[in-house]
Image (cartoon, rainbow, N blue to C red):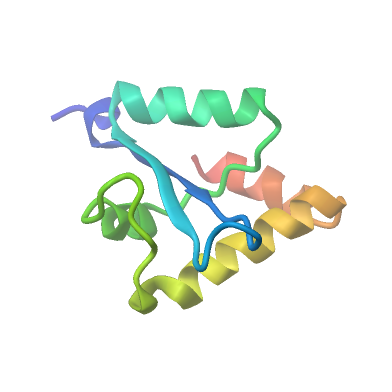
Length: 100
């Protein structure tokens, strides 16, 4: 199996006015994962590489609520996104992109 086929990507959605907890908005492997990452970057959405989390999210279906066991790690992702969106995480984003 080549590296492209092993790559996984997920997109999370969390709107406190509409969602009780974060929701898995998209998930894919291989070319689909590449497209998810590409669309996120086009939209200016921060990308945080985390293969372990992607593996855990692979067990869910799109539209599923994030289970309580993943709250802590997903909270870290949301904090990262908030920092990037506020401009504080610029160096974090660059570091994450270098790890890909």
